Length: 214
Image (cartoon, rainbow, N blue to C red; front, side, top):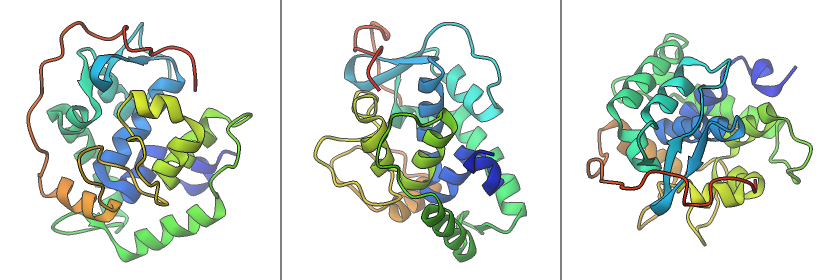
């Protein structure tokens, strides 16, 4: 039994409680990377490559559909289809009493449960030999720290982490000029502070070194 099955939540749901929409999208991007379904391009863009893998869940499928055009991670988080997918992902969590109204941040009980599972599934000390499921669970629970340990080159190319930024436990970096703790980032994202709109990305993916590596 893998860790996510033991917990009873999908990895993107764990990340949604732990790091908000940014965390959920980060886990989906990592899942697609592990399936070989996306590649990185210039200016830290991401785009889909090849046919859709079998067995994708609705959340990952929505993220992949949005990447038929090159987008940065930040643009992906604020894409209207992704925001709808996040809203739908929140419904079962809210029904379980894990999100508080009206801002839909994690309840104290949800934070305690995430912390319990984080202690039960500590950050791996090596990346070799981990299953894809264990990698996704580590990213969902440990945020930037797991990205830097398990997928350092991909995370940098994809704009999921920034060079030299500290990796606090459970935090997902917003990858901009300053680095906030994940709870502050979550409050901003829920309140609609998404920044600028989609930028133009010419040339698509394929020239940014998306293949190989971690």
